[in-house]
Length: 326
Image (cartoon, rainbow, N blue to C red; front, side, top):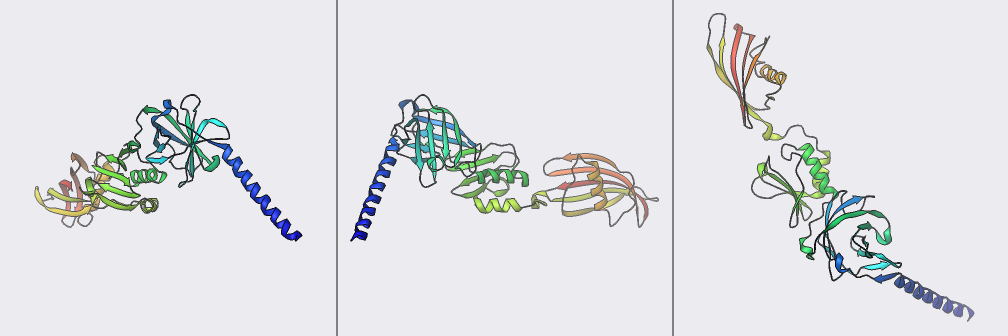
């Protein structure tokens, strides 16, 4: 009997304690209302303090505060803001799915910043700062989030595949798309719905799905460029004349070599090496080379070369035209 009474009292005490604790929790948060002066669209920049937050460091974020107390962050909507622990300068919206909180201040004066954290301010990820750009309340106008993975893919593509994605262009937004356009190559590199997309230039006029963001990032991280395929391979045609000790102006039969790299027309050593490589089976002891560059365009490189060499016919002087095309 005593044991049953103790158990009953313990259960009653537990229920009372739980009710009391819940009451304290409810009292620590009060509903917040967005001031009229705060309503509108804000253009903000994220300053990362600790990793793990919802944005990449330096990401541009569009935030909308609506008159119905809804907060839009890059198109995601959160409702039911609260003041916590009596602090009415900072209104807090919870992203329960993502595990983040957005604390907007200062409701007692003017817009200051947005603190981004986990639940109950732990951990603290960083801050959004910037300014109000309009009074529009349309969440659909919000831009997508530029994630850390997206930024890494942009950077890796521009460093490892620069012939398609030369650095120096800005990130842009169109609807759900985050993208960069590379005018010199005509290529778009874009992200939407977790996928990496390619369009234009060497990739054609139809959108190419390169795979998920995670797979493409993993591939680029381990990729070591050796050459870039057919885009860097040329066809070399060698023509001209040569003089022997007995006859001058003999015709040099056109020699065609496919799928080879073209030398840099500004690098004389590289040009001379291309001559040695092209004639290694027919000539040796190549002497001083006289060079004249005639063309250095996107799809044609050409130079004239005069030099002496030793062949099966003896000493020969060559006057040749080297033309690389693609």
